[in-house]
Image (tube, rainbow, N blue to C red; front, side, top):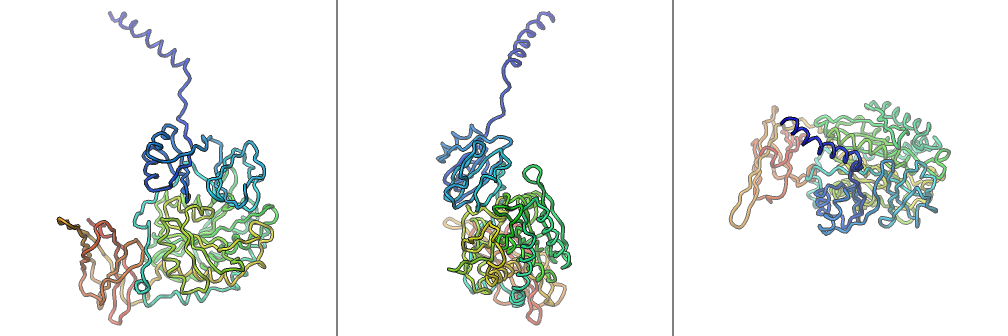
Amino acid sequence: MRIRMKARFFFPAVLLLTIFLIAPASPPEQSVLLKITPPSGSAQRAIADAGGVVVQELRSCLLVNAPSKAVPRLNLDGLVSTSISFPAQAELYFLVYSKLPSPLPAQPADIRCLLLEEGIWLLWTDNPDFRNWLVQPYQLKALSLSGVFPGRDKARAAWLVADDAAAQSRSRSWSIIPGLVAQVSIEKLRADILTLQNFKTRFASTPQCEAAGDFILQRFQQLGLPAVTDPFKFEGYYTSRNIVAVIPGKVFPKRMVLACAHYDSTSGNPLLAAPGADDNASGTAAILELARILAAEKFDFSIVLLCVSAEEWGLYGSDHYARQARKEGAEIIAVVNLDMIGYPGSQQRVLDVIGNKKSEWLADRFIAIAQPYVGLRLAKVINSSLTWSDHSSFWDQGYAALCGNEDSDNPYYHTASDTLDTLDLGFATEAVRASLAAVVDLAEPVNPSAAATPVGLRAQSQISVSLFSSMKTVYLHWQANPDPVAGYLVFRADRSHGLYQCLTAQPIGATSFKDSFLAPEQAYFYVLTAVDEQGRQSDYSREVRDDENN
């Protein structure tokens, strides 16, 4: 009986094994790169539900990598999709920004190029020498088909500019911004731009670029700042380094304000002549000037000064840093990127402050704080398609980031003629002053007041619902200061680290406060200051969200 049963089941098993050996193995599911419109929040949710990832958000469309089987579902969701390619393992993908009719005068078979929207092309290839076919001037951003990191802090998705009176309420009387802004030196900017230019080229992967990195590192170290190199590889076997310095925060050192610029350069003959005075010795000199002026100052939050490399190759240095920061959970409050701030052109003196929708609050705050200190006009530009500089790498990781950039077309851009003698250093000086004012405000200078900073702030919220309406009430509690104080001031913002408005006309003696009649769907953020008997305010306390202790 046992033998008969064994025989009964042996034949089907052999048959199945034979079929398995004869039939080809099922290939892994092929993904497809799609162009999808419109680039809305609902579209992104539908893409995630279908198992796709957003590779890049642009103003008019989304680049999406999705399983092939997801395409019908996306179409059923009402999204308009166009298939671009079936990505292969060895292929490189880039966004190319070019004002030419095509960045390729001729298109070899192993380089594909597709116009996505005006001035922005998608290029993909397995040819590592594809740059030899591109016509300058152009800008590159390397793309990862694994997709961008979604923003996790919804509270920082926007920031509303209030009226002048409210803006005044945020700036405490001890503000050091005017004195620091006055220290920006046109001669020091000139000297640093000239030094960087004199490396002849700073094309990433060359010895001259490494030497320029050494110069930046030594400058940070001479100022007494903790500074390190951050090495990385790109495109298989090339290497370069970011240079990172930190002004440690005194109250909340894990929270960081980051100012950055790229120090590499390029041209039509980048191995021999790429002086890059405007692009981007001007931005790098700005970071060095911020380091010089701010190194001895004290701030609540840390200030990270970052000079990145391989930007001209495709934003590799900033992408490496931003990905690592997100992986480690770095609390980067804001990123101020400076790229080309020395050539305003003959028609206007405008510095564009570029952000995406999630960074609009930062652009607004930059302009509100910095505009009173400069004569040039600060112009807000919210456009997610402007991905050609290092701020974009931080957008990809969900951080709020902006780019300060001259609002003009520099005719010497990406040529051997991009030299110091073509620049307007008066304009560059004002751009540095604006950036310094914004960075100082974001990092919150330590107040030398006699009053100690309040500690132990806690918040709880409660929503009351009636037949026709609902409202939120927030209850705040904190510890009494160990030193005598006249009382406490309570501040509220509707965005994290946004524009704090004072809720108490006079210092209150209690260690609790109730904030009523608030919109139930809105998140609110609170800080305190202590006021001593001479009327001097302390630093802000730790910020809390209204439902933090619910």
